[in-house]
Image (cartoon, rainbow, N blue to C red; front, side):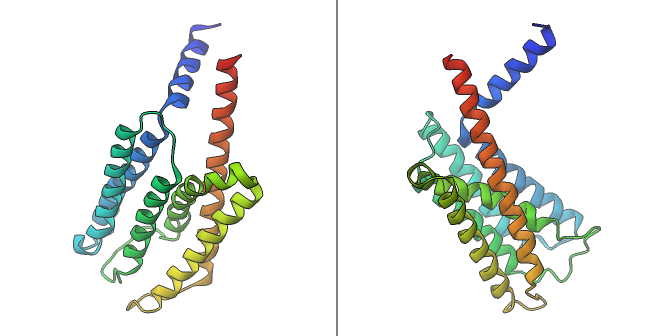
Length: 201
């Protein structure tokens, strides 16, 4: 085994052994920081994004608390559901703002799959007990049904927000994000299982 290969294996072992709550802390924290950057870059009034940023910071703080209370890393569904609800409120809070003064230097449709990819991962965490009891197809059906219905309700909600227009194409972008989030969740679980099997052998 070469030194570089050994270093890579050690790095992979550290990543795979990391408590799942830690990844959620990083996920919420990174998006909170990203939202601050976007607020500045798009010249958005902070009063229009502070609720959304507060919700992301709350998600990071709650994930940190759960990480401290549960060092085993077992993601109980009740806790995961709470984080998914916080993220759903984050999406709702952004959709509730007109953001008429925003000056985006690039297209904003990219945010739909990015947001719903994160939402998809959180929904996968919340629906994971169903996968253990009834299998992956039922699990994925639950994740997609929840995510798509929420995306549709969010578009309907935007019809009541001044200067906002609901669009079916946005639901398509949301569905793509859910697909990516579900794929990432399943891939991470598969890699983790293979790593655990390797350590046990």
